[in-house]
Picture 1: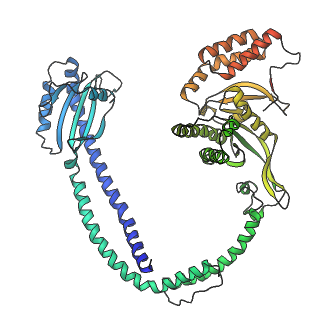
Picture 2: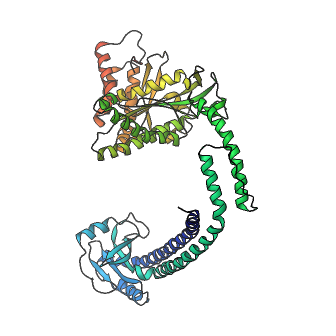
Picture 3: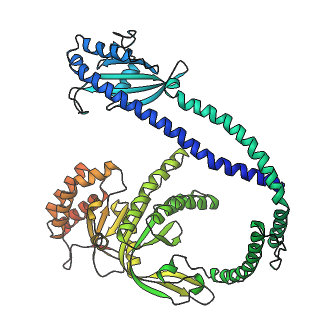
Length: 538
């Protein structure tokens, strides 16, 4: 394709991009203004009508007052106004501007539709090939109280073609103007492109030479215009590319050791080239672990390629939720994700967003006739050491902390407790505005590798409203059961957990506590029992 033709296309495109948005905004704004004015006019007229119609619709006797107002509207000489009619709550036309439908019954489908209208509404409909703008105003027993007894409806219908006539006329004129402008731009662009094409061709050839790897090539254009300046900058670019090529080689060598870019900010490094083995920083962060439940069973049914496609599609749905909440991925462990956040709020919000994204992901899987998946998320907050480990031949950014192990253990507990998102009480206590979340403390555990017991908190956000409401409704009774369990009052604990399960039979945490309480009630507890659940496996 010739340069002159490209310049012509470019100028045409620039002209279009400059004019099209303005035209579009003008047209849209015009339609918006007309629609708003129509809405306001209809609202005022309908309010006046409804004030008269309210009593007459309630008595359902005579409708003289409505007829008088309709007569005034008919004499308003508004060419766009097609019809105004009033329908009672039984779906019968009680008044009609044209006197054609009075006393008739609307269709069953229209009756059902109007019952869904609970506030003033404007919509477009098609009638016999013509577009009609319809304004629907429900009439209630009490004025301006849309939750009181509904008496009927006031409906205005406008001719779309007449109502927006000025807009359509402007569109038509704009089209003809654009055609003329197009021909002018084509001629003008052709002349300009011929003038500049010679030196531009030289620039194009120079780019090709540079692209082939000859970074020592220099242009010899001496003109004192923008093309000359461009040639000078081209030569400067050639020098910079040569330097960048040298830096690139060094960067490639550094990248081969692979250090996550997010580590630079924490380690206060300007470039990955500044990273050195042993760089580290101690910092308080929130660690998030997530894992697909029964991933092994799922992957056994898939080929290797299908397994990778499945994992990647899942990660594509989850990772943006982490990044959106200012977290970053530390590592992937098969289908598991380990992510780091600066604050516990960001981590919890990220976990909730992951669960909400999972709902959409499962919906798409269902459309593809695939089984939905479940995930578990565990979050803990604490001090950790973030740094670079490895050897001079291969380095890696990593996190070293007991907090990482606890976050992983919490994720492992989600399946046991039938929860989607578990956090430590330490994480909850560091959240400034706890009221943002719905949660409950479900157990005190001592996980494998930890000597100190941890209170486990279930975050309910991200679940369905049904699950959230069920668990919130039993929170107080559930807490009583936990308290009695810790005080060795197992008989009372059994009673409380049974009460929870009557309301929510699928509460897995309550099921587990009920089973433990019944066992200890029948067999007793060891002498050193502290009311803490010892978890020996992940």
